Image (cartoon, rainbow, N blue to C red):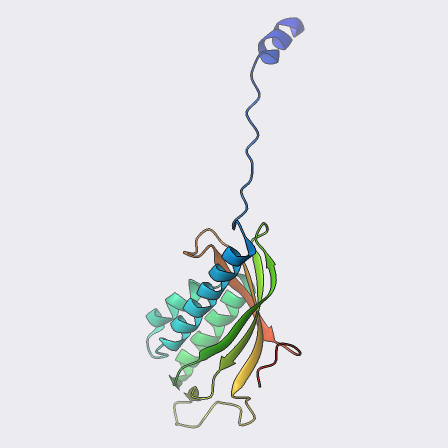
Length: 167
C-alpha cells in the first residue's frame, strides 16, 4: 500500500512556482503613483463638507491603517461638534525620499500650503492654532494597496525637519 501511494503521488506534477510581481516596474512609476495618490487625497480633503459625512468617504478611500482610523475619528468629531471648514490646502512641493518599487513603499517630502484653510466651531470661533505655519513640512508614507486606483494608499503623515525645506 505504501508503494502504491508513492507511485500515485510521485507522478503528480508539482505546480509551477508563481512569481510575485513587483507593484511598480521603476522608481519613477512608483513616485508618479505616490504623487497622484497624495494629490487625490488632498483633493478629497478639500472637498469635505463637515456637515455631510458622505463627503468624508473619498478621503477614506485614499488612506489605510492608523491614518484611516485617525481621519475617521477627526472628521467625525468635527462633524459632531458642528464645525465648518473653509479654504483649500495646496501641495507646493512633492519630492521622493524613499522609493521601493518592488515593495510598493514610497515616502514623500511634501510642502503643503494651508494658509487659506479655516476651521470654526459651531459658535464661529477659530479652531486653527494661531501659531500654525502657513506651509507645512510633511513626510507622507504610502504603501501598496490593490484596492486603490493608483496601487498605493497613504499610511502615515507626520511633520518633517530638514531638507528639502518649505521656506
